[in-house]
Length: 169
Image 1 (cartoon, one colour):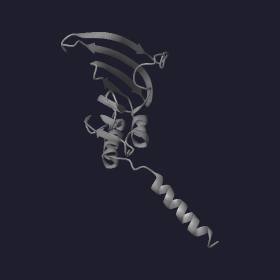
Image 2 (image 1 turned 180 degrees about the vertical axis):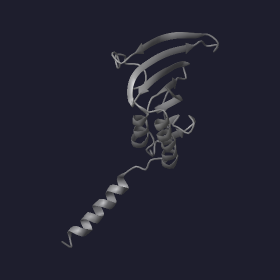
Image 3 (image 1 turned 90 degrees about the vertical axis):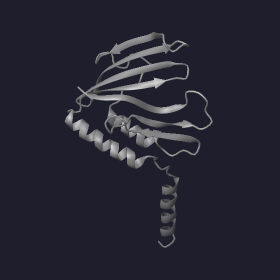
Image 4 (image 1 turned 45 degrees about the vertical axis):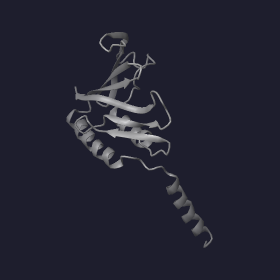
């Protein structure tokens, strides 16, 4: 039994050392507290808007509607700005209801904010040696940006989520 104990201790220490620390852990925890209060006040029924922006001036907005903790609708719009920046061309627009959810491939994933916070903690905010990690909570304390971009990437490198608004239904 004496030989097993040092092996177990070594195994436990190596497992903790292998885990990547989550950057912004304290900020994410504070933000989640704001979200939990919002979720209770809204009866877990809300809309949130996920945005993407490209250096090519192509932008998208996906609005997700959550009722009682379930995604019930999703809408999407994509626009392209002209070189001058003044003219905007609508490229694509669609809406899904409960019967057609997931029928389009573009747009943000069908996720509740509970799932967004989980992805932020488990994937997007992990410390990476080769990437910059970003977190902001500009939606009344709730998550607005969570993700990372590899350091040597030149264009459209962000992996994560940008949420421009979160509102009660």
